[in-house]
Figure 1: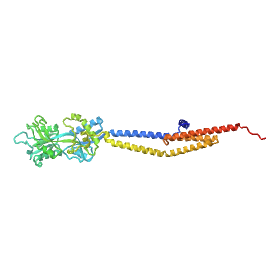
Figure 2: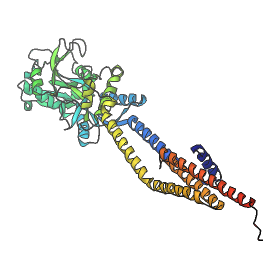
Figure 3: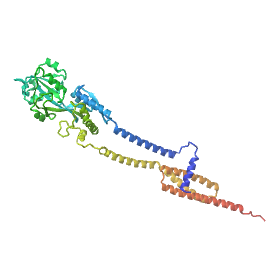
Figure 4: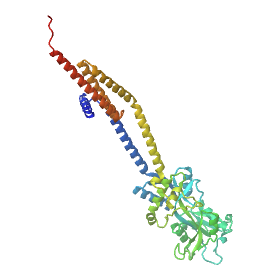
Length: 466
């Protein structure tokens, strides 16, 4: 009897089971396969979701209703509409000082801040959102003895547009550079609207405004001080280069002629400039910040088209001695050194493969260990089969041979189950098949011998006593 015959007999034996009776070995194997497939699907699905889930970043920006708030809100809407990987959640604050404080306290991930304020200790630049210029002008008009230089502001009343202390600090730097003691002037801070009404209550000799060259606030303030035929006299900041050397957050710049209307100014004016930055916490993921930077500059044309007077996105300074160090994620984008998926996760991938290989080996050993009892049992059954082979050749009973035959069938069934479960190898099954075939031949030969003996005895005539 060959392996095919044994398998056929096993199937026939399985078919003889009562309906609904489970096959424990096969069910166990099937459950293991199903569990492995489900675990793999869950792992792949979980990894895919984790890699593609949107990341929401809180960004502090202020003051309320300012152009900066409008720009950031527009960015947030575009990112959400286009289902970008990084999404923005604007948090409106009282101003850049409050935004910086929120970032320093860890209540936000990003902030829009002026480059000349005290920065949070772990703030790093992502992008420059716009550039501001200091515009200083005398309000008395072009007359003999009028103010034409910063040095002549000593003892005067100077109006500063905006309630932020940062603008007052900038004025003090300008005065000090020109040799004017800041305490010698009277500073009056103005709100960003209603200049005409405020000027009626205050006698002002000069005004300072800080903002983009296209700022409507600066233009309106200049217009409000230009009534009654008095034309503003723009004061050049000749010490702008020196200020930039002393304070890296500032740069020397120029106000082109006609920036605030015809003849305002009549020629270019030297001044001080600085940037408004989007900054991120140093601890923020390099991959996340890199993705955000890439998204920002992918919509730069859209944002600058929507806010042509206030938004001018520029990349951060990636030099090591930059006033505000660039976040590594933003620097990688600017320098073209962003790492690909394989670059970032190759170590994890190879480590995972090695771990899976080790787990596979451990699993194989553990499975082999669990099947040790089955192998021992099967080895005993094989020895029993060999014993029955010897006994069959000496048996003198047909009933005994039938009983051994039935026992051999059970041994065959258990051996096939062990093979299906992987407890024994194909070589062992082949050896068992040879032994079983020898056993069946021995039983068949012995039965034929016994039947032949029985027939011969029946044909022999009985002897008669004389």
